[in-house]
Amino acid sequence: MEATHLHIRHPLPSRLVPHPASHPDSWTTQLRWLAGAAVSGFAVPFLGSSVLGLQHDLYLGIYFVTVLGVFSAYAYATGLDLGATVRRQWKLGVVLGIVVGAMLAPVLAAIGALVALMKDCSIEVEKAYLGAYKQGLRALIPDSSPPRVAAGH
Image (cartoon, rainbow, N blue to C red; front, side, top):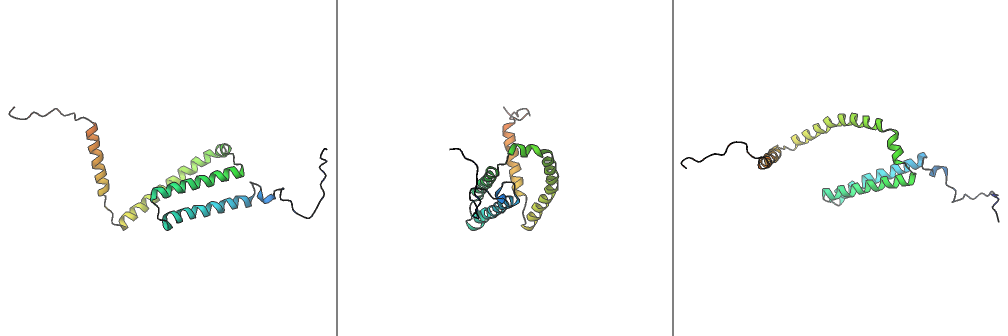
């Protein structure tokens, strides 16, 4: 028997037909994903560092996996074509990255200097590291000066 595509109207909504708001390109879908990412972006650092007090590297690993998982779920659920997305605006992304990086670098350096001043830090760590680095280089590079001969032999 062949289907005639005849449909009888009824007042009950169909669960099989997606609502316009559930379309991947709709604003409500995008806002839901944004809200979910914001909640997970806050919850993981809060729970990992403040509540559980995890070791820093472990916490960052969990955070990285969470961000990667949320992004992968978003790309899959919305049917995002990553190749087309990257190719579409890559020049603008590079320019904005350079501009924002140039603006943030001095700010972050100033914040680091202020924190060092407020905590009364010294640069002994850097001096010790540089000394060890120079000793390592001296061990790798042979001395070019002539060998010294002891007097009296």
